[in-house]
Image (cartoon, rainbow, N blue to C red; front, side, top):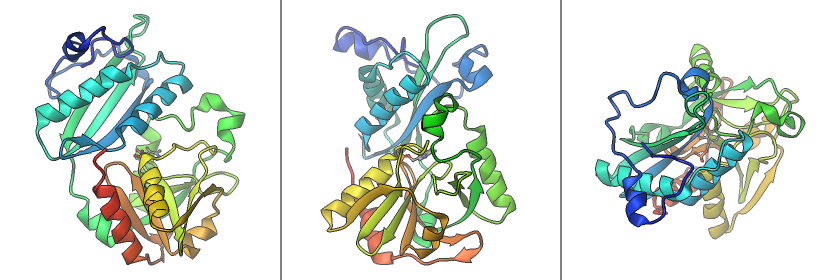
Length: 288
Ligand code: PLP
């Protein structure tokens, strides 16, 4: 647990002391915390391999951006960095998923609650090599929702993920593994916990992030891989037809990294195994 997640302690000793080790299986958060009663807060999940947090700074920047979108006080990124360092060190496991949370705190108390939690990651090797099947689902918002209705918080990583979970149950009912959201006016958005990336030959495309979607850190790493290997990259609107036309469609996310999509709404599709393997190797090799 972080003492006050929006205040940076004065020096290194105070910083270390502001991170309070806690047993995750014992109660830590008040039943009055707005995260518990309203899902009112934000989070990030990053991958830590061999002690290194992948895309640590982009995750911290996105945490700060989500805080801005929710009118929360700015998190102390120094304190979160220290919490991450201590959580990784205490775990000692070579493959971790590290979760950062900032909540609005107990209603009326005026102090945010924050914590960092690290746990070993599940084995995603089968999904990474064999791919996942996907259904497209209407998100119910137009693609310009972030501009027309910023209070809907599309594009912030909030703790209100009940919808992001319910769509997995809908996918299961339809016999699929995962979901790609489509805007109500017909544009490809993102997965419930992933960014969509398409490969057309040596061109990589992802939906532009002004469409009420998260700026993905794993997607950014796929683009880095592409740019280092002669691919061109582009952020733009994407139509559902392109999900079938692309050479590869990936779902990109921090812990699972990239998984190729092998069917969309029951229609099988292939993927470029050479490009997929090279991109996956690049992503897994990241140590910062
Ligand atoms: N979009 C949503 C809605 C997500 O929840 C996530 C990650 O959980 C992503 C995209 C992918 O982001 P990242 O690659 O930074 O994990």
